[in-house]
Image (cartoon, rainbow, N blue to C red):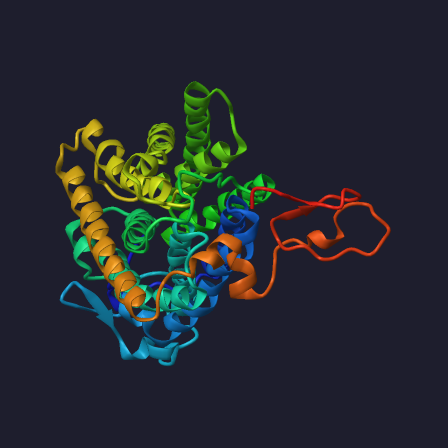
Length: 452
């Protein structure tokens, strides 16, 4: 993503109605990704946790929006201070910005850039929630989002994309969020789950997705919204770079989905819908940092490598015993690392920049820079997120009680259930309502447990 740059007054850009409209559409597409993520995660959990999973994404829309207006935009994209953080008083409350004031060096208003970046800030903490299914208090989660966005996301966004940020100045390439979004969220997820521990019944009880159609719907919305996420990150399309990113987004996603499915067929003997959805997301994650630097053939390579490695990585939680409920670590952390590092191999030069990767005669220099960016963000997010989770766990408590987790977090935390089973069956007599996760068998006089 291009940061703000200085221009001479004579060369100052003029507002472009076309680019402004394009970026507003892209912002709306990225906003749609958060409800899409909610459906994606919501279908992957058991019935008794569906609403909680949806709400963990939706609450980010509320909390991060307010934080962004109050001080988040200023911290991430204000005037640099020590290459670590930004700050501009005019950005506090978005109160000192003129409605026609342009983002530095571009043809779109500051307001448009701010709202586009807001949507990135919203979805990043929401991504973390997939690793914490079934077991986190909603109030603790809301407070964690507030703290994490403030001390992790806003500074990292400045490092990667803010003018003067140390990773940007080093020359780390991250077109749309491989480090700032996916590695950041994936590492945070790992840090939190190492603190709060496993779900009750992990590796013992069946924890199958309760609605694969909902998963596929969510994956489709993510894929759709991701075109705004990626193509919009060039902040316009006057030079065609955004169009290249759009094409590469589609190509890498398709390749990753096919690679994941092929791995599944060889390893497990079937092509699953969950594998198709997960493979597509893995491809979207991996092409996010690299899509402006590689060719469409390079995008195929990125997708295939990410699809295979992420498919293998999701099983590591069983080997090492960490409970990454919905594979945030396996898909977002691993996919973000893969996509970011592959820039150093497959960058062709002549698209978003003249930087070339190893396979195009560029040597190891860019690969080294990418590795520094990857592991700096990974280490910072992992450590700080674990500290935040530890402090919250020791003060207000991060986890719900065990009996709440077993019976279902939806009813206790939200006083609702995702599905009304009281009307199930075809009996004509009066029936008692049964709790979520129980299948009432009409005419049998008994209740039959299902995997909830």
